[in-house]
Structure formats: C-alpha cells, structure tokens
Length: 233
Image (cartoon, rainbow, N blue to C red; front, top):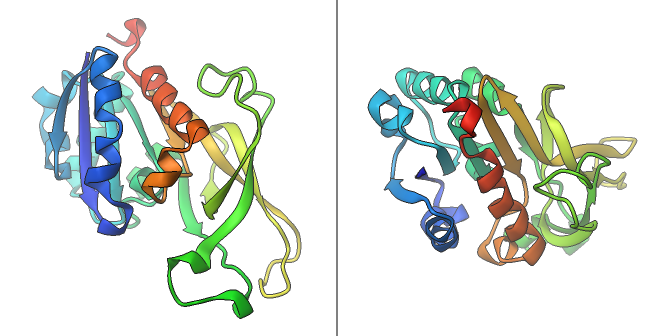
C-alpha cells in the first residue's frame, strides 16, 4: 500500500509537524510513504494511479486546474483522501471543484466574548462537544468513542447532503453573535466519491489537539478506512 502525504499552505497549522505525528502509524500499518510539499504531484497520473491513500494538510493556498483534476480523478478511481481541520476543510477556497469533492468547507470559528478577547489565537478557542451520530456510534472510524469535549477552534462548516456525518458540534446562541438559533455543523464525516473514500476530521488546529486520544484515534482509523479497498483496485 502506498500513502502520499501532501503538506504545505498556511504555517499556522504546522503542516510538517502535524503530518509527522502520523508517519510512524502509516509505516507501522504497512504503507510505503511518499511526502510532497506541494500539490503539483496531483497532476502526475502515474503517481496518483499508484497511490492508495492521500493524507493532505494544506490550509488555504491555491491549486491549479490540472492538479485538482488529477486529484478528483484519482479519488474517483479508488484512491482514499483524508485530512484534518484546515488542511482539508479550508483548502483551495477558490476551487469549486475541490469544494464539491470534499463536501464541506470551513466558514468561520466563532469567538469568545468580546470582554474575554486578548488579541491572539486563543480568542477563537472555545470549550465545545463533539457528539457522535447514530451512524458514528456504529461506523468503524468512530465506534466505541463516546462524545468528548475539546478546547480549541470550533469549525462552522458549510456542507451538502452527500456527506455521511459521524459526529457533529453545535454552535450556541450568544449575545455577541448575529445568529438566533443553535447551528449544528458536521465535525467528522465521510464521503463516497466514485470508488474512493474521503474522511474529514475538523478538530486539529494544533498539535495538542491532534494528540488528544479521541482525535488521534479518529484520524488514524480514518486513514485505514479511506485507503483503497480491494473492490477499487
């Protein structure tokens, strides 16, 4: 099995350090791992057709037309695609083809009360719950994981109905926010695209979140579940 780790984009999400956390797991799980520092590899059909799993950690940034076309073709042909937080759910904002592939896009992360803001990234760190859905309680990625809490960025996600939601998070109504009812966002989801499987885990802003036992378990199980299946070979 071959895994392709593609990393880069906004340095605030520590793409090198974050992906390096999972390299030992991939190798121990039998993957031959190739690391690329840009999306140019997506345009190489010989590499993509031989790849069983793509782990992407590229926040924001841009992608060329031939690169997104290569990524979409590979996933449709059976290559798995996974990642966490902004590295997959806040990538290539200007590409509607990418957004359609992934099925959900980061919109914002609500802040703490104005009175509690200090002007750094912790202004967006909230204590929130990740709540398993009925599907999530049975799915191989999340089975046996109870609802859990995190203090980090809580992603508000715009999404479509083709995703299969394994866990959600709810944005409450607060006096300093303009919405007037609680908003439920997917926190962990899968998506079938052609013969390929996609897994998105929205927690993962920082290394300590990725090292949370629940988050790390979801990410690692997601890698194994997304990897090319025998029927897609």
